[in-house]
Image 1 (tube, rainbow, N blue to C red):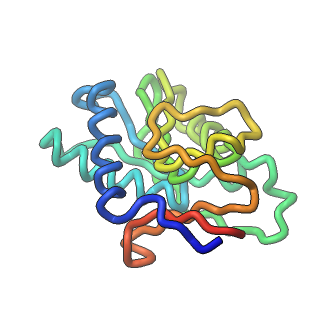
Image 2 (cartoon, rainbow, N blue to C red):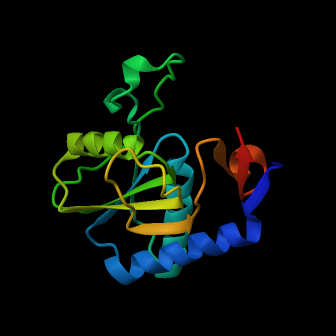
Amino acid sequence: MRPRTILNSKDFKLTISRLCHQLIENHGSFENTALVGIQPRGTFLAERIKKQLSKILDKKTLLLGAIDPTFSRDDFRRRKNIILPKPTNMEFIVEDKDVILIDDVLFTGRTVRAGLDEILAYGRPAKVELLVLIDRRFSRHLPIEPNYVGKTIDSIKTEKIRVEWKEIEGEDQVILQKI
């Protein structure tokens, strides 16, 4: 199977815009809401969403943080290739705030579970919602479901979803490929 483009650059931008409008429907002016991206690649999506929301809401100060769940993962000691953690950047506490946890791809749910553990180090949020660009819904190991989904992909274990970002790969797109 040759790699197949799931979202091209135009659809990618449109999907992020749609997600932002869904967030505004549920969070209004974001007075008590924080965006938190999961390192490494969920932070790109979180930054894009913050930028788009700031433009739509004409608001400069939206809370944006980034967490690295490396040490909270249940498979941390099992991994053959230890990945060094990225810097966590949380300059606020989440006590009694609505938190939108953001990642690029939801696969097994283990990274999100670890991300939830990391968030608790910054207080007890009023509510946590999950936003993902891609939901691989038939692959869960844990009962975790997103509140906001850019696109749902039904893929098998021998396929990989690759989200490419303009900042890294030079173009925004989502690709499905054989492993």
